[in-house]
Length: 59
Image (cartoon, rainbow, N blue to C red; front, side, top):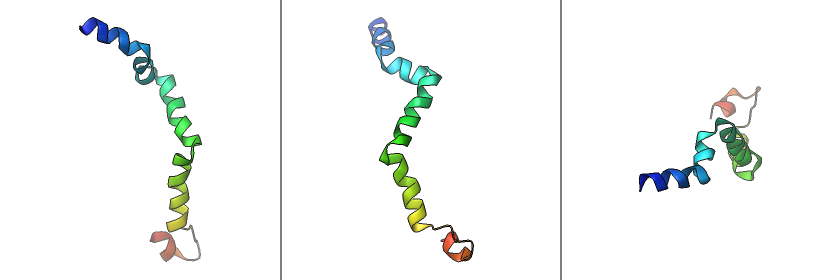
C-alpha cells in the first residue's frame, strides 16, 4: 500500500512540492493572476503612500 502511494505521489504532487524550481514558478503563476495583484491593489487603496500626509500612510 505505501509503495503505491509513493508511486502516485511523484506522478504530479511529488514533483510540485519536492522540486524547488517548481515551487518558484508555482508562486509566480498566482503572482501573474489577479489574485496576487489584488492584495497590492487593496494595499494602495486603503493605504495610499502619501509622503505629505504621514497620518494617511500610517492608517
